[in-house]
Length: 286
Image (tube, rainbow, N blue to C red):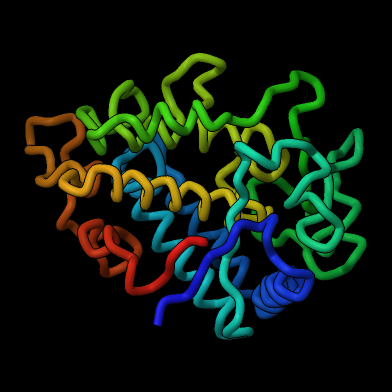
């Protein structure tokens, strides 16, 4: 039986509480910090050596789809009623709207050190100490909207520009491409400091969301559930169009051994992008 991922703004009070409690339990067990470490390990950019599986690459979408599923399975082992909600940033656009409420994710960071002081993930609550990160800080940080150099969240038009591209991805399959649904949604290579859609949301949230340790902010999962929903919408709009590339680049290509083709293994899992394209038997979005 499939389960349902809901809009965070539509969760009932009980659903919000159960989601938060399940997250806190996964954190208490130590399992949550392993998700942080996994994301850091796979945050490989164009200028780095080796395989890019999670970012600046065609497999950005299937990699995060599987990553999200793993977290969701961990939550559901704690409470089988819980699924990961999504944050529609094209509609809930203020620093006090969902998900930035005291009973869900808490609010903005305070001036100065940007430490989150409200909600269940504030250090003062004693249940969300940062143990795996890029910096030495042990508390969650946010800078919603970027106080010193404000930016806006992406709009519905920004999302539509990505959804209007019928091609999944194009050579050279990295952060520099200006065509293709994947990079238009991931958000590299544009104006405004190269931040569009997904990337711009990370920048807008700020704090922990600016680094490879962005998983330390639970909003990471709500952002990627909404990104995953866009991929599903794109798939339904262009049913004959598939993940690309279908075949890996050859030995003469600068991308040889650097990206994952449709039928290749997607590290760190024993699964291919092809196997992750259809999730209709696992979950749906409300």
